[in-house]
Image (cartoon, rainbow, N blue to C red; front, side, top):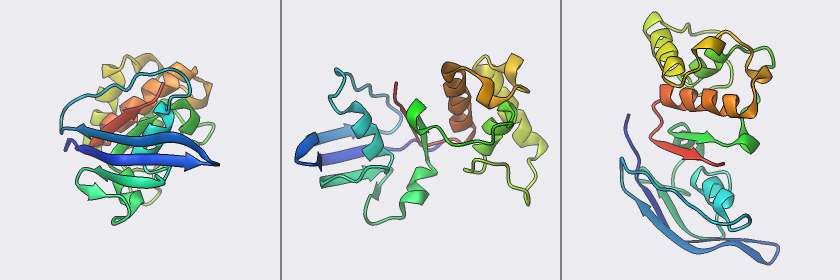
Amino acid sequence: MNAYTVDLQDVSVLRQGRYLLKDVSLDVERGTCCAILGPNGSGKSTLVSVLSGYTWPSSGSVTIGGQVFGTVELAQVRRGIGLIEPSRSPAFDEAMRVRDVVATGLFGTIRLPLQQAVKAAQWRRVDAEIEQLGLGAMADGVFSRLSTGEQMKVLLARAMVAEAGLLLLDE
């Protein structure tokens, strides 16, 4: 996995005359962990949304893995980000099995591609991540029937299979 650096410089998010974030600067070196703690309403989820490219800052600069937002295609940057948050969970087919959801991480899609078969070595990676996170007993279960916590663990396995350069976990 190619871990990403994170660099925010003076990022603000202003909506309807109210700052959701104001002058936030953050540097996270490649391969390190960072936890953002704060009370409800302090901007943690907004920060995650900015880092993942779903919320555009009103001012400041965002650089993820050396890619400056506004100069690169955000969809390309997002493919290298594992975003795991209950409110932004992808809309998988209701009947999709856990194992297949994890395998979609190999392709950056929400469905397994029809034109591209999952190879045996890829299935081994999928199964290894499922086991690593203690999801083996539910691998053939239906994703939509899992609890929210179990779904988040499946999405974490999906991000690990995708070898995301940046993992963002929100609540």
